[in-house]
Length: 279
Image (cartoon, rainbow, N blue to C red; front, side, top):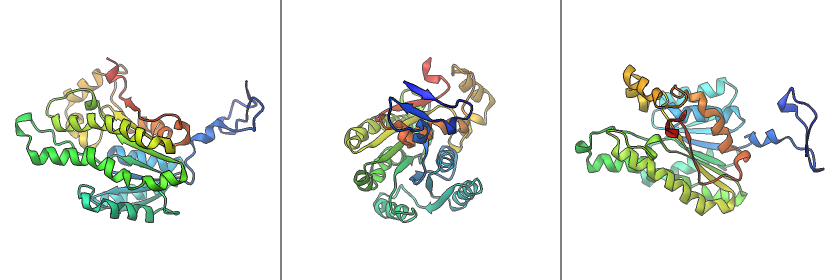
């Protein structure tokens, strides 16, 4: 039996679980004293997720190539009362991943990264006859290889402390084929299996590995969609909710997957798409 002594203010609820010590279940969503790295943190989904993590109490390290945009993102988080640091780095250079990871750890207050959001990505939108080996390798490297190899740099500390969170970014194209998206779709389909494989490898150490698959959200990667009225309207018409996503729609799932509240969920991909894939 759950006894609630107050309903009007959720944050002040007192709960009793079958005579156990009082514990507020909402405390599971707190990210106080947790450190997160967010790749692709200078814009779009990565920047939004970094902001939500910081507002939930985490200290965040935003990683991206563009220094000015990165500084703006960090300043915005700090202006809202969050703790954020920037690291300018190019993840596509795989030989540097270990050093980049060390720099990320050095920017935390205890040298430990509790979780990572793998939001860096690329979508070149090439017609199938124009795909080259170089563009294929670039897409598969950044979208699929880097999330694994970079995340692995942080696993020893997560394993030692018995806590870790990995959030990968999948896509509608993880399960749907769109024009001019063959390499991107292949990489994002791989992200779903990568997430399951990460969970198989690391979840026994309480390192939960999950992915979100966003629908159409206004970001730099989807500028071509939102810049064309007919394409934007088509995208919204494909959802059961009749609208495209807004970045704030990602706040809840970001905090949930990052926090102790998702402690028995791993290897899953959740579509945040307004019902696009429900049809």
